[in-house]
Each structure stands twice: as C-alpha cells, then as structure tokens.
Image (cartoon, rainbow, N blue to C red; front, side, top):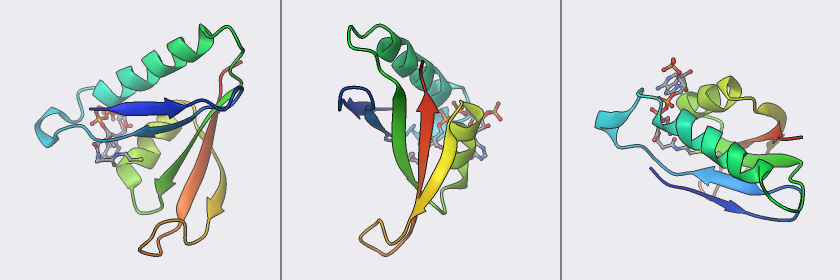
Amino acid sequence: MKWWATSTSSSPSTALRCVANEYRRNGIAKALIEKMVEVCKKQAEPVENITLEVRESNEAAIELYKKNGFKTITKKKLYYSDGEDAIYMVRCIL
Ligand SMILES: CC(C)(COP(=O)(O)OP(=O)(O)OC[C@H]1O[C@@H](n2cnc3c(N)ncnc32)[C@H](O)[C@@H]1OP(=O)(O)O)[C@@H](O)C(=O)NCCC(=O)NCCS
C-alpha cells in the first residue's frame, strides 16, 4: 500500500494507491489514513484539510473515505482520461 500527499500549505492533496488483494479488509488503508492525519497534525504550518479525488465507480474507496471522516464536496465532471467523473472529497484536520 502506498500513499502520497502533495502539500499546498493548508490543504494537502492525497492519493491512496492500492492494497494487495490478499491483504484487503484488514484495516491497512484505514491505518494509513490515520497515520496521514497524525502527520498533518504535527506540521509546523497548520494543515486545515486533506483533499482527494476518487473515481465515481470506486465504491470500496468511497466507503473507506466516508468511514474515515471525508465528506463529498462536489463531482468533477470528466476528470479522468477515460471520461469518468471524480468525486472530490475533503477531510477537515483542525
Ligand atoms: C480501497 C482500498 C485502498 C481499501 O483498502 P483496505 O486496506 O482493504 O481497506 P480497510 O481494510 O482499511 O477498510 C476500511 C473500511 O473501508 C471500507 N471498505 C474497504 N473496502 C471495501 C469494499 N470492498 N467494499 C465496501 N467497503 C469497503 C469499509 O468500511 C472498511 O471497514 P470494514 O472492513 O470494517 O467494513 C483497496 O480496496 C484497494 O486497494 N482498492 C484498489 C485501489 C483503489 O481503489 N485505491 C484508491 C484510489 S482513490
């Protein structure tokens, strides 16, 4: 499992990549989100939000993010190169 965050001062954008099939539903992604939030809270410059985009069809990821405090803000039409829309989600850190 990998994740990265690109910091734009108060609102880093993140992307969780993927957990190998055989390790899914063991809380790995949840633990990584919690770690990411912990790291954000320790930054000298306050981090207000974490933002992300997820494919509209990715029910597993959307459920994961909702369960971990992310709220849907809007839909980004035709966000992906194959024409799929993205769901834009934000989690408040402060
Ligand atoms: C989405 C993904 C990262 C989840 O990783 P994971 O380690 O299996 O997730 P967790 O075990 O931490 O799950 C935490 C919660 O997320 C939700 N969730 C995770 N997988 C789910 C699924 N397949 N269907 C529905 N809900 C799901 C559940 O609420 C789950 O809690 P529960 O197991 O107590 O019900 C993983 O399925 C994956 O790698 N998918 C392919 C790549 C991908 O979609 N990456 C994200 C791109 S934005």
